[in-house]
Length: 145
Image (cartoon, rainbow, N blue to C red; front, side, top):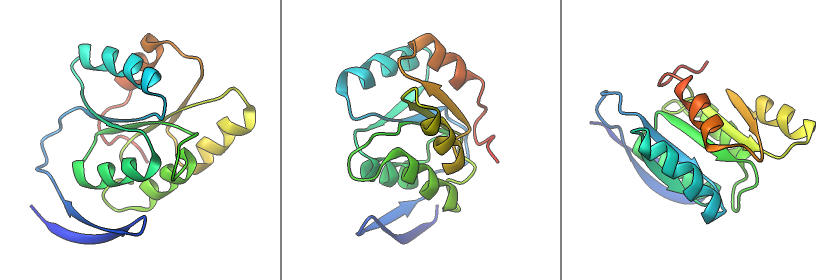
């Protein structure tokens, strides 16, 4: 394991790289507790380990320290929005290959902006837990870019 320090959102964070076994661990970023619970339940029932965050800053710290194999994020987040989160994950050496699934509103500009920020896939709200699960299943660990 390798420890190193990194400046993250104004906080000094210790980053510990986990071993290389591929556990299907999803970082679910959603400010609405009910929406987070809805999708989380179906993912857990399908055997995925979940990390949860309600804002972009917490999500970034968890992505850098807990090695998710996929990040699923809303775009409208407190602290750091979902677009900026995607961009930061794509710039970081440890997270740039982690697939990112963005769930956003129906505006075409949101879809284009999510793709430009680094999203591998974009789902439009409202979307069913089954649709989310199908999209997650299509993404092998670290299959991005």
